[in-house]
Length: 274
Image (cartoon, rainbow, N blue to C red; front, top):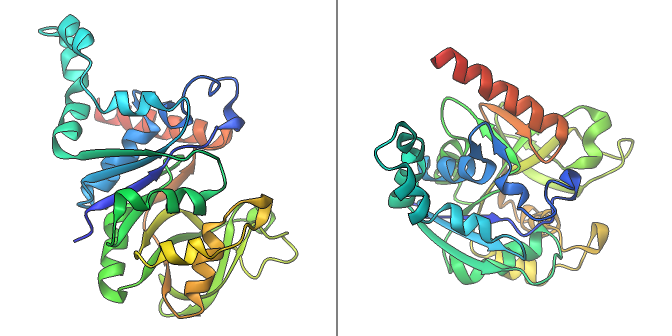
């Protein structure tokens, strides 16, 4: 069983300034829940009940969210508003929370390596909270099944418009079936005319612990940052990476358009329940 999920949450969230000047982008709400809570719920549904956070400056609100706020709870105790905390209370009781800090923002690969102290020597999930995913079955739960079958790194992918490939890591490889591809090539944020495909990596991974040694030997890449894609490319050369076309919908909540789309989606879903 994969027990731990790593959440790299140290980034600045500059696309949402000034809203993210003093609060983490992962705490931006979709309706009444912050993005990071959706991510932890997805991990917990997949059985990953040890949430490990790689944080940075101005990120204390994340730890506070998964903790008791005595003054607030006392104020609303016995009122109709008390039920609004039921979902987060359950998550707090069901999961373990650990934190470490990324001192410098040197890329996703460096953030993953920073999390080694929390993960140890075991396979683990990675969720990027600004990629909000929904499906009949949690995306991470789907990916665990893929890991159990292939016993190697698993990355979630989806097709994107060709003109948008420059935003993503792009993969190609041997198609095993309509949903599984054994990755051969990975390119980080290629120009559209140079992209080998339009199959893009989104913010869900299952990684094996040998990824830490590979990252530590990976030189900075695009943007002068240590790219997880570059480390995974080294593992792909050994046939150790499976790309999985997941069943569900993904919202890029790191962009304003995606954030609004997700808000509208969950609002309509809420109205249907009512």
